[in-house]
Image 1 (cartoon, helix red, strand yellow):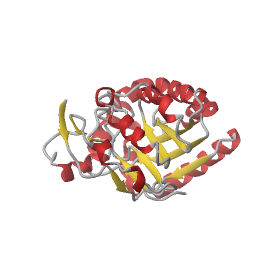
Image 2: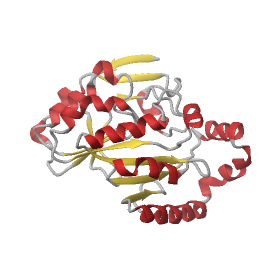
Image 3: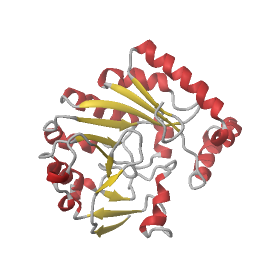
Image 4: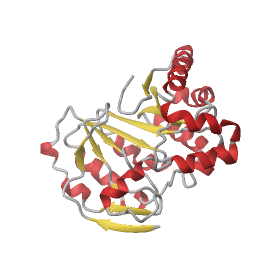
Length: 270
C-alpha cells in the first residue's frame, strides 16, 4: 500500500449527488479495494493513472485546517465519503475524518457519514455532539464468502450489522445502504431482517457497471455464478430488470414497515 501525505486548498466541495449539498473526502483512494468500485475514475484527476485502485491512498493531511466554521451554511448537508471511505484503516492513524468533524462542531451543519468500517464506533462520543447527524453503513452482499472475495479488506457483513446495532444503541441515527445490489445474489430480505431493528431507514443503489469495473465484476460472476453471466452482460442497458426489482424491494420494505429511498439510475432519487 502506497501512502502519500498531500496538502489541499479546500476539503469541502460542491456535490452533484441528489441527497447532499457538499462532500468531504478526507482521502484519495481507498484501502478497502472493493472489486466493484466505480470511484477509480478519480485516478485520472489525481495523478494516479498508472496505479491500481486499492493500492494507494493520499492523505489530505491539512484537510481540517481548511475548514472555516464561520463560512459553513448551517442548513447545508455535508456527506463524508462520496468517493472514498472516511473510516478506512488509515483513519486509525491520521484521524483526518475525526479532526474535520471537530472543526465542524461549532457550525452544526447537517452531517452524513457513509462507511463500511466499524472504526466509526471510535467516534460515537463526537457524533453525539451534532444536532443533525446520521450514519450509513454499506452492505451489498450478505454472503460472507462472496463479500470477502469482492471486498477483501472490509469488515464482514455481520460485523457491519453489529456496527449498526452499536451506533443505534449509542443514540446515533442510522441507515442501511444496500449498495451495490448484485442481482440474484444480494439477498435483500435477509439483510432487512438482520438490520431492520437497528436502522431508521434503508437506501438502495443498483450495481453501477462501467468500463473501468466491468471486467472484474464479470470475472467474479464467471467464478461464482456462471449461470448469471448473460444477465450481468446485459445489465448496463437493462432498465426493465431494475424497474421490476425496485417494485419487489418496495413491497418488501412496506411489508416490514421500513422507510426506504431508491437510487437506481444513478444521480436520481426515486
